[in-house]
Image 1: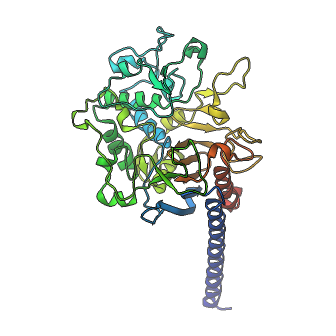
Image 2 (image 1 turned 90 degrees about the vertical axis):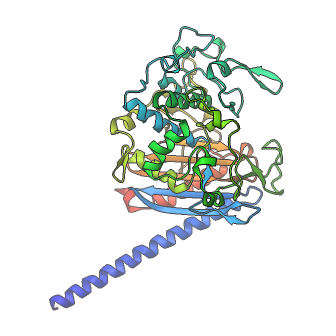
Length: 456
């Protein structure tokens, strides 16, 4: 065989091998598509839309979109669709505040009153300082009076947090009392209001409005579209990509009609310009950043979420841009609180048995599970995906951004509308509902565990 003939033979073999790999990849992607589409169209439990993505060794090995971003306009969900990603927003707020910790403008263990200009203390424990570390790890003793945490423009935190909220006709405090655990015992209670205080600290330390700081120092440098204030952050073209969230419930999740129409939820409507915040022209920095919903108001797309996951997997830098230092990322992913198993007494409420460890602004996934309504296990009934990240749940949206920094992998999904009550549609081996458990299982089993990289 001549050298030329030999090279041609090798080239032919290479082409055949690449073609085989491409065909295998296409077949795997089609298999995942079919399984996820079946989940979206489950009789009696349909989803309005689903965006899902898997990363293995820094490569996107699956990305898929199903359903619609507007039922009325018949607009499909796609890669450009901007979604209000609920509590995944907290992870982005945490990134922003940790930049200021790196810069020496905030200290994790200082009394936050030193920055706010007044003491912010639990009335039951007036001598116990609250720190930024407490806020980011949800051990501050602050509580959400209800699911929705809402403040008016320029409503001072040091007044709002001491004024009982009226929920169902009764007064409810923002603070744990003595019967609900001394904060010095490092008691975990997941609360949206913690991130409102964090965002206000960002304004105090940076001298910038919260939404603008995050856009200028986190989102834009990282190449993540969208922002926390749609009226300013989104273009007219973005309005067409804004996703309407849905439930098959005429009263925001109280009563469900699985055979009924999709009912829009929350503030966003595809094709419509988002409303300005009332009174925003008179906004004062550092008073109360809660109007920007730092706990749940980020609008971005699936690929934007993937970049956030990859940022953590790359130890704070991505594509030549440094957002955080490696030591900061490591600190964020280090457990600040871990559930003690109720011995001798519980040191946290585990958020309906779904949270067992927490870092700085991130949930740490511990692979607990094995029965319905219990555990943070993802993707496998016996041994699932581990790592860190954040869940999201609001206005019919269910989402999880999970990354495994040690192995440079990630699983991300966003459900944009629930067709039945998720509280009655539990998974089999975790605290996730059935849709989420199926989605995570499909992505994990067929996209990550099946890859040769997973075996390495």
